Length: 88
Image (cartoon, rainbow, N blue to C red):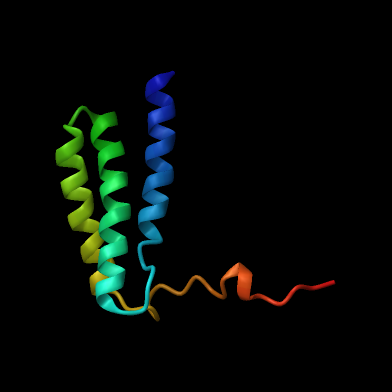
């Protein structure tokens, strides 16, 4: 049961990695991608038997690359919820 919960958490972390495009400048996007990637990599490392540190390092590198090599037009998730006009 513990492994299943860890796997579900890893899936959530991978989803967060897909959202690593936070920020407008490439440096901001790379930094947020590295942070999200490190968390996802650590979770995956724990689930797969790899060391947590190795998983975090690999995830941070992948997240930083994903955040730094994409621009905000390539990953457009639409208007943030707090900026949308409320429909009554």
